[in-house]
Length: 313
Image (cartoon, rainbow, N blue to C red; front, side):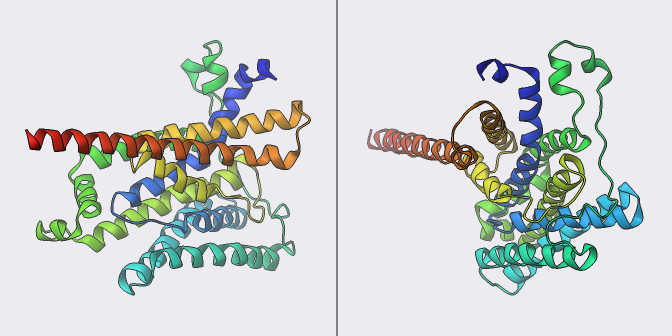
């Protein structure tokens, strides 16, 4: 078991397991910066996973399938924004509604089109290709870990870098963060609050679409009912750790990918109960999240105490 943890195959699996959660976390990061808690990420990913499969299956064109998934993600995110921002419905209730609609609606559409309530294997859907990186591919160890991943895996890390640049190095990113920090001040500076929020929701939908399509068009070649398996909810925990920072969000997602890969190897090499093994990534994440929040509270108390001493002096 320990030897497996140091193998290149294990670390290759870590990066692959990280991909959908990283993309969902980036979506949570982007809306966090404008003050939105998008509880509907789980359902958005599920809808996009099915939309991509259907689009590619009926058109036999990967680009069309990708565009269908992206369009579904943006549309679902804007529907949430319409009800929460325009109609002023509770944001969390809207997110729960999307998740419930996605859980039942995807099964209904799947059953209607394929006759199966479980999987879309009868549809000839397409897959995103795997990519071999020419220079890295020939490097021992590094080539086995970093090369040969699906195209979406590489896109996810590129999106992480672009998201960080957007948020911290552009005028648009500063405007988005201003909205999240203080809406009234942002409005007084001439920033359209709703425009920034709808733009952030569209970006969140984009990230969720690739996260969902990775599951149904990269990791597998078909859609399976409830295949997101809580990854959208996990992204909210990753965002809580990273506080809207894409780099910290990527690190948190890697942590999940590591523990998820450990459970795969435990299932193969240990005699522990399968349900206990399956719960381990979530248990670890809860523990880490608890520790992170405790450290933040301690650091905040120390900072307040130091500030008070400076003011008293």
